[in-house]
Every structure is written in structure tokens, then in C-alpha cells.
Amino acid sequence: MKSFFLDYGVEKSGKSKELLAREKAALANIQTGSFRSSTNKQLIPLRQIGLFRDKLKIESDDKMSAEEKAAKIREIDAKLAQLQRDAGA
Amino acid sequence: MKFSSSRRFFVAALAVGLIATALPAQAQQAALTEMNIGIISTESSQNLKPRWDPILADMTKAVGMKINAFFAPDYAGVVEAMRFGKVQIAWMGNASAIIAVDRGGVEVFAQNIAADGSQGYYSHIIVQGDGPIKSFDDLKASPGKYTFSNGDPNSTSGFLIPSYYAWATNNIDIRKHFTRVVSANHEANILAVANKQVDLATVSSRKS
Image (cartoon, rainbow over all chains, first blue to last red; front, side, top):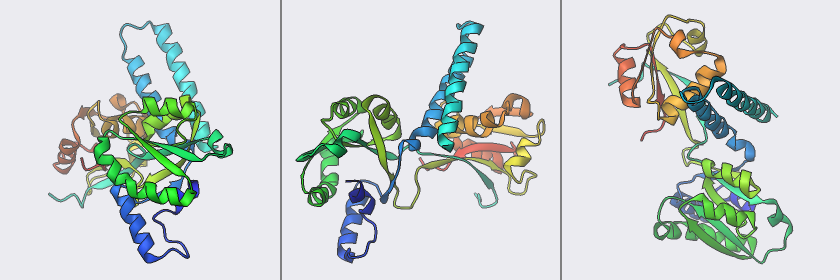
């Protein structure tokens, strides 16, 4: 199934020009050019942005005590640091 | 208006708007006779189905089993179905994919690339083409020197991405680093730099 997606709409030996054109048209229907192999790492930037957004929210929260704020921010910073390591791994 | 003289810095590419396809580990082992694919899109399924039909037909031929497509407006049902192995493959955006991976025990295995080769959009910091700032390092090394027009606080590409990738990760507090900070939408930011009202501003590569 994975190779089906990765080969779809891509030039390959043995694939006729007609078939390639048909595949490209089918992909254009779903606003896609082609596929490339990916992993869960693809999601890291969005995870970082989400955590950062949470951090900004906590920092600007007037109702939260200073200790609670510090604890929550430490927690987020630890998660961000872990994501940074995951991204490099 | 001429933008050709403005200089753009690449800040970060965010895969938002990209589609992840997820495959649960158990699907690889079990001998399936048919497969269910979940397609998450805000578009109505009457519009979506005819667009997907040609690919689904080719998929059926390629894998030699029946493919049933389910169109869903949000992730909830699809993630649940994946968790119980009722849906083996899904097409969704990255925000939904995070939930699918965390709660549904699935894995991203492919990413779509636009016909023009792009994988999403970019957040940019723009500066005056004939101005003193030549690189991001110039910006970093010059506290107290420049004025900045930030994006709207609700904008992911104009505010959140540069706030994290350009400023926070470089330990820059924009309120201290720049002599003046205002915020405006992308279009107003482009004009403010072009008219030399500010030294730098954030914009998105996304046209909309």
C-alpha cells in the first residue's frame, strides 16, 4: 500500500505515458502532486508550535499563581526539549 | 508595487495544510481481504467522492482487494475506528494526525506534495531590500536598533511560527530587542516595510 502511494503519479520504468498522465490527473483531483515517504517526525513542528502556544497562554494568565505558572512552564519546556531531541534523532 | 527589492528570510517551514496518511501496525500483519480508508476533509462528501474515485479504483487494482472509503468532516470517528483496527488507512491534516498518532496508535507513512513541489507554506521575515539588514544574524546581533511589525496575534504564520522559531529559540525578547513593536496583518506588514515605516515585519508565503 505504501509503495502504491509513493509510485503513484511518478515516472517509473515500465509505466506508460498514458498511465502516468492518468495518475497525475487523479492526483490533481485531490490537490496533490505526488507522495513522499514520511514518519511521525513530520508532526514535530506542529507539536512544537502547539506547546509554544500553550506556553504563551500560561505566561499571560493573570489568575494563575506564580508557582503554578513556573511549574507548568517547566513542564512545557521539558516537552519542547524532548521534541528538539526527537527532531534531531 | 515592487516587491522584488525586498529581502526575505526563511524562518521555518511548517507542514500545516499537508496531509498525512497513517497506517496502523496491525494492518501490516493481519491478512485482510478488504480495506477501509478514512478521508478527513471539511469539504462535503458529495464533492469529495467523485474526486477520490479514480485513485480508489487504481488502489483496488494495485492491492487486489476491495477498498471502502469513508468520508468524515473531522478526526474523531476516524481516529476511533483506527484505534479498533476498523479503518486501516487515513488521509488527514497534521493537526488531526497528531491526535491519531497519540490516541489511535497509528503511524504516518506518507506525506503529500503539492503539484508545484511545495510541502506547505513558509513564514517569512521581510526587510527593506536596500536597508542595513542583510541576514538574520544581523537582526540577532543588533538589539535596540530596529523597529518591527509583528503579525496578528491570532495568525499562525504571521505570529506564532516566527515567535517560536525566530525569537524564542534564539532567546530574543522582542519587546527588549526592538525599539518599537507593532502588529498588523500580512498585507499591512508588506506595505509598512515597502514604505520604510518599519525595518522588518512578518508575512506568510500563503496567498490567502
